[in-house]
Length: 300
Image (cartoon, rainbow, N blue to C red; front, side, top):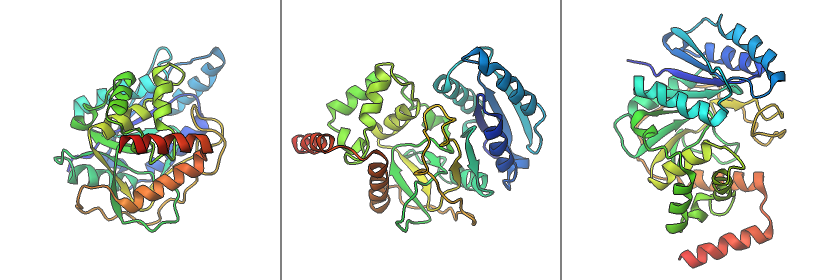
């Protein structure tokens, strides 16, 4: 079996990156996996010392089949770094597992990702594999599908990443023309459409909302685990897009995920659980909800 290479994207957080690498190294398949680390350049002069400290640490990492460090000479920004890095790896290896510098994985993460990437490699309905599960009290299946794509500890194939549309305006136009914004927003629970609009306007640079929209508009599905294999440690205010909040906190699974082929279709129970979670995070105003339901009524 050929194991998927890992693409890790880092910037200027040595402490977080060490935690990410330490956890990843404890994964069962770490010694069989090639690790590619994309280290972004400094956006501000005062970030340079931390980046140099981090790169010194990264250059001595062991515990993997191979470690390749790609040091960006100037600041790419998270979106460009990820988009170009993922493209580079999948074009060469046909598949990839993607992590950022604040994601801590369970010891079974790589096994689940590789099992799933191999199982659904030739299923065109499946665009990606996700390792993070939103906190939910709902009892969910061992694995299940949701339409779209996610961004915290994920994997895909070249055929999946080829569907990524970097032009947010094209995605937004298609969403509006097909009247799918309500569904895209998890039935009005979270303003993903507005996030995409902000990206188009240049107010945010999110690659993730474009990845989600690309998968959603192509009616592709992502496989999720019934227990989270990824913990986001960046919700402490140190990250680029995540604030200080414990709403994203999850307990990592203490047992492996049993991966077996299931029907590729939306898991209604999981979608409702995700919608409830997104609503809890955003807590939309009455006016926002009224607008969303009105748009849904018009679409019908």
